[in-house]
Image 1 (tube, rainbow, N blue to C red):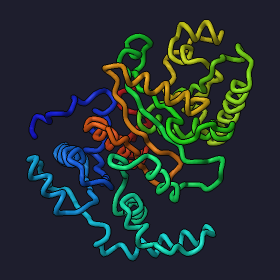
Image 2: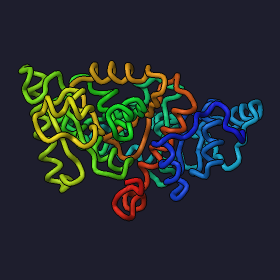
Image 3: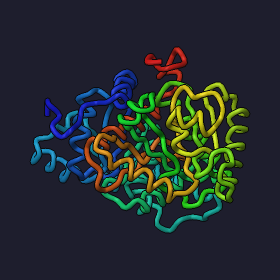
Length: 363
């Protein structure tokens, strides 16, 4: 596939990500490997020298699919979890973790761990892989249930959450910047608390900084700007803004992350709207991170944006976990899958390796 038919050209977001992986290749696990889209993405991943794809599934089926579609599996690793020599080791680790968290000894450990998402997670935890791209053949809820076992912190204020990354060229032309935005939470928590929103804001800002290689601006979105429409949801967003700022300051990131809120979306994007609504010095760049007050608002906004013909959409990138992982919808296309694999691959690269000078070369 020399011309990469079916793939769009790399853009201002995915181009630098691919360059990073060429310097620091990573191993990406695809738990649902029996999918021709995964095979095409894997072939390109290898050809671009971005790393090594690892497909979970039946070897015979995957090889037959590749042959029928003229896809090369050179340097693509295929593993059948049920037949893996590492399965027992992974089962032992899973049982120890369950007992440590007071969940008791599971009755069907082998069945659980041989499930592809669990097996992929164990591969990353044991250093056999670097990141995971899942969900292309599974329901969202089934992936969430599996990865919820691998949270960084079981504390309720630090739940699993989802980040969508959108690139909107029209916004870049109209408002400035690169038109790359990180949206949270777009997939998990229906009605986040103050603590949840602050956590989403700080962690999403860290990811945006990691991907963009520069300081980032966070917009805590609301129907109100600085109390212009007094109501409960705005009060919650205002409180979350204050908490997020305190966390950023405590972690000594205040020179890298700016948190503003509560703020309306037009003020977060447009310098003209910002100067009118916020009554402070005009912002130099639009906000990079958008934190929504509810899942309804996030989902509706994201889907409306993604209906624009030139928009590129990557993720969901799941946050709050022990390793980089993305959850794709079942109707995903190869462009989104490839771009999302680049994202989680970059997430697995240490910041100082990506940016030895402290910032991306572009900046």
